Amino acid sequence: MAFFLVCHLICAEEAKYVRDTTVLIEKSGLNTESVVCDNSKVNQTMLREFGVVVDDGVLTGIAAHPIQHDRKIFIIDPCHLIKSIRNNWLNTSTFLIAGENVSFEHIQ
Image (tube, rainbow, N blue to C red; front, side, top):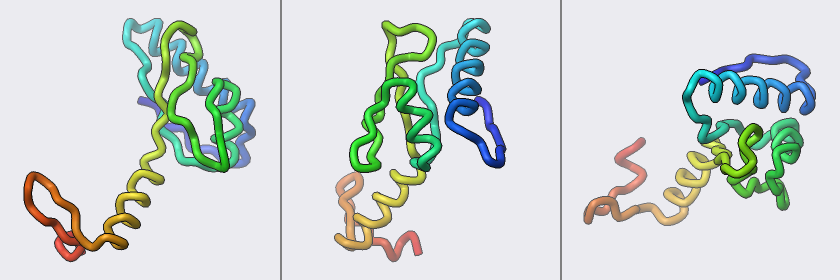
């Protein structure tokens, strides 16, 4: 796992960091299965370099692996997932989880 704290990062630099990190991970004998990032404009542009389709600001979630092109790499936007779950929960008020109704009040 790698974290890059940056200021004024451009997509070409970010793509290089992701590619270089993937090379190091793969050379160590491990596999890179996913990239986790939010859906910012810089990230969207960087991910386009890996073949990710961004349609109306929504990521498709799958790209060609930057090192081994016969493999896929998954793009995960946890901020968007959490926001979507929260919004759906607020709109429907309850979810059915393991056969039980769970309301948003349980979380609050």
